[in-house]
Amino acid sequence: MDTATDARHSFGSRALQAVRTLTPGYFALTMASGIISVGLELEGFHVLSLALLAVCVLSYLVILVLSLVRLARFPEDMRGDFLDPGRAFGFFTFIAGTNVLGTRLGMAGWQGTTAVLLVVAVLAWVVLGYVVPWTAVLGRSERPVVKDANGSWFIWCVASQSVAVAAASIEPLAAPDWRAALALVAVVAWSVGLILYAAVGIFVSLRLMTYPIRPQDLRPQYFVAMGAMAISVLAGARIVEMAGAPMVDATRGLVAGASVVFWSFASWLFPVLLAAGWWRHVVHKVPLSYEPGLWSVIFPLGMYAVAGIYLGRADQLPLVAAIGRIELWLAVAAFLATFAGMLWHLWGTLLASSLPRSGT
Image (cartoon, rainbow, N blue to C red; front, side, top):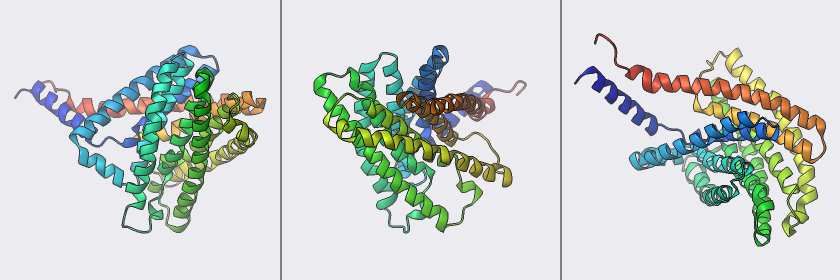
């Protein structure tokens, strides 16, 4: 077997291993690129927004195909993810990624695609919303389950709120007979997301207070605590703008006031999470290198920016909108750095070691 053939076999085996170990939370890349694209579009940076939209669409399709290949080739590994409290809640990134992509496509005039993606996301939300908590937490014989709580659990809340955002975004263009149903879906998903946030917050707080905290435990996924609160703000602002429907009319005042409160809490969480990162990487010198979980940092940055911009415009709060605009460029910079890190990681993992060496 010649060197070129060896290289091809080496690449194939590495690629297959990468598929086998693919984290269920990789759709956070779709979430991050999609929400930053939304923010750039809101601010009028159409070319940059389209570039991020291209990344969003491509990442969604690639990760979806790889996930299906993984399900077909390595079903036991995927089953193991459903049983792992540290990885199982990452499956909810599929729901959130689907809705973020749908929302951005709706802004581009693809409302039909948005509706289809919303149906897919709602079905996945209903199924995974019961399956994942049972397989990863409630169905386990090991107790206590609190010791396994971590920041990735907040993605459960993000998935619910993403359903609310997508439903509210297509409601103005829906037929009158469908508007009441979309309003019901949006308000129910928003409400469920808030209850889940409270529950997960209690579990994670108990974990942090009752068990030792090691530097390696404070993984990037804890940033989702801020992202979940920020997407609750965005969902609330979109619901307030919905046309009159019984469910919206009954909750409009509550949702509007709560959205401002949630934005305030998300703002309060920001320095807390930065301090945790400083403690992990500077004080305890944990190396900062690329890992898929970093997309769980980029998405909250982008979502906080979009939530601020949208809330500021909807409620006439110029300072909130200005903070969102500043945050948007921080999210763009963080996205570019992480995306470059991902490409370098893929090069080193899949390609560099597989290239044929001259003279061998």
